[in-house]
Image 1 (spheres, rainbow, N blue to C red):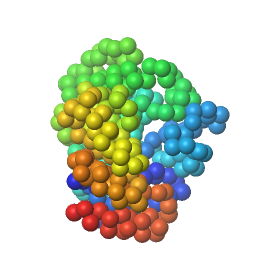
Image 2 (tube, helix red, strand yellow):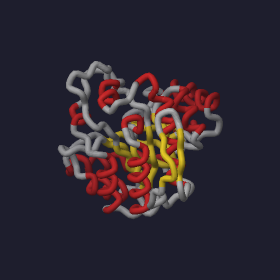
Image 3 (spheres, rainbow, N blue to C red):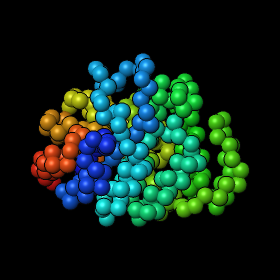
Image 4 (cartoon, helix red, strand yellow):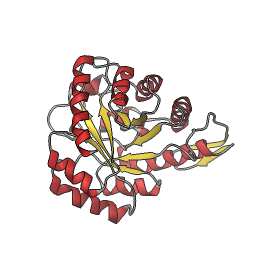
Length: 276
């Protein structure tokens, strides 16, 4: 069982290099950070967790800048995007960013992606919400071509290029592991299609773990499951994840200044130690 940390890293919280050093020093295997390029002021899309959108959504660092700082401060910590909104990103440029970070960090990238929920945000990037699933799959395929081919050529519905030479290549071959966020059967199937890891958000109650694993078995048999943004207070839920055999539990860490963040990490490390 692996345990990681997910946090919204912002300009008002702990620095990403300090956070990463603290996460690694306490024995967690990975740090995941989120992404939102911006939040439209006239947003109509409901916040998936309900209620008002928390203020840290408006202030998030670019994930690849934050993870580069994290890489510089650590030696073994895995560096995850949780999740990169590839439906809002240029696939050629993003392939370069992922490969550069993987090369710089010595092969420590976990590339988490998602289709996104904020319809107004994705429309600002020129993305049609109705086609974002197809777009995500196609951009992943285009990026894999750029990562693995000496001269990459790709022609799809949304992405087209001929004989593209892109370096550096990722250290981990054929490419960094792809983690697919989302709790739907579409996300589970996508993880299986890309030989990746399904990364659903925490399901909230122990009784929901078995149906979630059944969804995996139906739409992505054998695909590893990594639980995302898991609260630490519900020990019965943690026990259920462990018993279900998930690959990793990524614990949610709130966005706070340095001292409070490190204290909170100490508390989370004590909980994790009980499972080891």
